[in-house]
Each structure stands twice: as C-alpha cells, then as structure tokens.
Length: 169
Image 1 (spheres, one colour):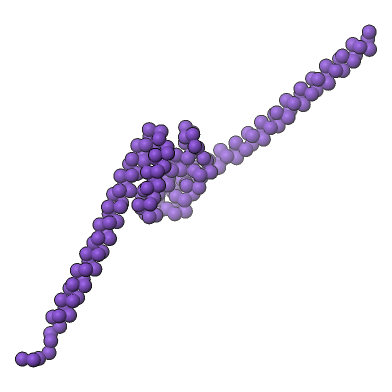
Image 2 (spheres, one colour; image 1 turned 120 degrees about the vertical axis):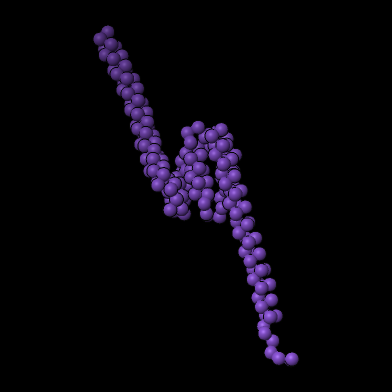
C-alpha cells in the first residue's frame, strides 16, 4: 500500500493550469472580437456621418476605428475614408496633403487591402492636382505682371500722345 504515486496530482495541476490558460485566451479572443465589432459599428456610423456632410464627426468615428482595430481590418477602411474626407471638395477643412498622407498609409500599412490600389489612384490624382494648382498660381502671377505692364504701356502711350499734341500747338 504505500506504493508509488501515479501522478494524479500532477494531472490535476496540469488540468487546472490548462483551464486557466484556456479561459485567459478565451477572454482575450472575446475582447478582440468585441473590439472588432465596436470598430465595425463605428465605421458604419462614420460612413453615415460622411454621407450627411458631418466631416468632423466622421473623422472622430474613424479615429475610434483606428484605435480599436490596432492596424488590423477595418483600419484600412478607416484610413481610406479619412483620406476621402480630407480630399472632399465640400469639406471646409479640406487638406490635400493630409489626404495623400492617409492614402499613403493605406498603401504602406495595408498593401494587401483591396483599397490599396484605389489609394494609389487617389494619391496620383491629388498629387497631379497639386502640381496643376502650383502651375495655375504661377500663370496667374505672370498674367498679373503682364496686366501691370500693359497698364504702364498705356500710360506711356497716353503721355507720348500728350507730348505730341503739345508740340503740334
């Protein structure tokens, strides 16, 4: 009767340790699932706010999505939507540079996302638009200088005409 132990105590400890680890992992998985659901809900709200033209509130919801998703889906969608908000012509706080930066993050951080190619297109369009704006600004400045030169030329012509009339008398 005082023979060797069969290891039943060790098995119980292993079972208890396994249960604890499993419950901790289960809690982590459940928390991740809940955060992902919250992120999806925020993304839906952000889309609705964007459609209503409430750009500030939409940006806040998209920021919430980013904080909840920790660089996983739907972070790509939130970044893309934020890029659209900053690129939108009706947004009073429109900022093409921020839009490009956000689209570039989609490309860099979520290269496998279906939105990455659309982000590349937006980057190209916005950068081309920026270059055209700079060219247009330079043309407007040149046009203004030409207008000033024409005005000066007219004044000189008037003065010369006045001198000619004065000599003729």
